[in-house]
Length: 152
Image (cartoon, rainbow, N blue to C red; front, side, top):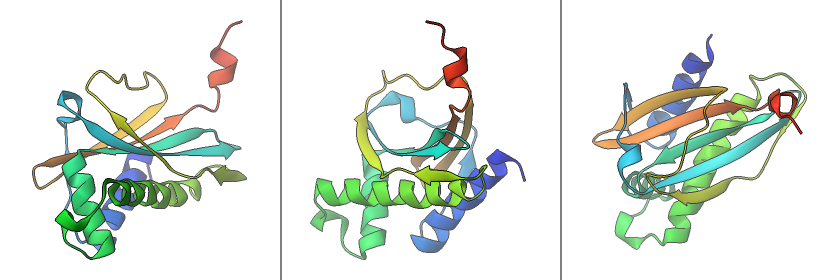
């Protein structure tokens, strides 16, 4: 199975099965046009890189409400960020098992991004989705050989 197919499968499993939120694969998303949240986990060991889950704040809030089985209005910003971090952790844990061993998964980090945040330019496997009208992207960034490419 290709990396794109693996990302598509594990993302669909998390969003549709665990959260009950429908996903469709998209060719492009509108994530570069406004504020977004990104949950990220690093994978280190025989393979080095990271997995990022990026979405709009409104989609992160919907996912948090589904995860915590509560109303969106009752969620704090910290709960929304915790939910996105856990989604990144689940996706990273599933991907970690498919990568060369041994490896370890970091704790998730959630950051606010804006349209000016540059995306990695190489070693990226990107899959874009739409959940109703909200964009979502999952990218796997391979940094295994990056140190060898850097010149002093």
